[in-house]
Length: 504
Image 1 (cartoon, rainbow, N blue to C red):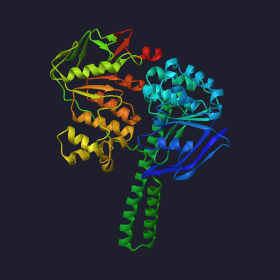
Image 2: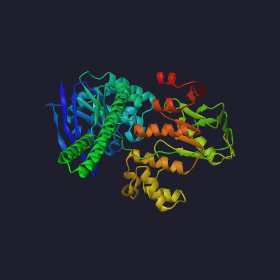
Image 3: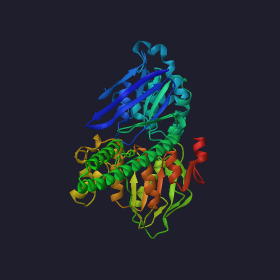
Image 4: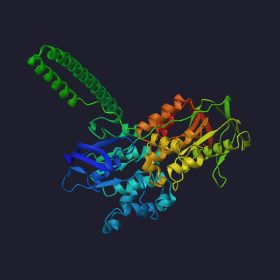
């Protein structure tokens, strides 16, 4: 049964985001929406939810259809609510008391511990806040569930909970998901919409298969375009030859034939369209200044503790060698980010032994944390680079433009940039620091799939030594060469991450 129909939908917000989008949503559909940063995915969800009107086209909904949307960011007004109250507030006020049991059922399914249910949202991690928003959307039992980057801030355990929960929803509930998590899309969607400025493409396939089909279509389009342009060029050459003969001979017939050939060439050129080329949201490039040291860092049974001194685990004796790409695996709260912080602190005092960590004197670290805290929200992109690096204004403007931040954005507060733009700014600052060792905590957060794959390629092609924490399974599988697993208060090296992925 068709529940939503989009006809020739278009959105213009300063610039055209997409146009002529037609889509049919049926009961029970599981649709993933994929596009580059800034191409209108969140805007499309808002249109579907009825929170904004499209610039052109129309949306038809089944009479009585109910929808719930989960935005990327937690509404500020809910910060002081407990998790339970935030979820219950989605219900009509006169039904909260009688229907409060629904919240407990959802919390149980989502494996939310009892104490967390009574904590205020501002006291909880981003992952628990995200699950609260998902529970809040579902408690009304909508016909359509709209999810904007639902895996952001979730660790792998919670992603698995989310996947299981989505799999257990009623068969007739439609779910439309905007996500850059490739493994997640493959696991939970059956239809993929590639949102494009023109000629958006829809496949009744999960992401991986849909992308392969899209690449085949784009390749066929490109071959067709090249063939048509070659034909048009041949016709124009024939027309030019006949025109010269016609002029010399004075033949009216040849003049007419020349005109006909040119008209045919023009028609072919008018109809010919080059294959779609995804608009880049901005370049991502890394640097690697290199080092002659074979061992970059030595860990001598380092104790990793909470800020209050509670021991989380010990590292044992470990070596980080040049060229290593080490992924730290472990459940939320075991100390992955704490270890990254200790290593960063040790590198800033290279050559010194701090808490059992020795870094080679030539080590220069580049660090990006998952919240992008190194990027000052109150500054502007241009001011940030000018303050950190001794480079001229002209080069700053060029570098920022290459990273997808135009002149107008360069003058805005960083707080106003999108998550994808902030991530690219952080990567640009990282590149300009010219490190030879990267510490990356959830580096794919906010990056579109093109950005993720570019980052993967840069890390590999630059032979960058790095240590990273990531819950992006595709990224970990592609980039990692060594895997450190934290469990039972110990750090052990494992051959690959698959057993952890399966057990999380």
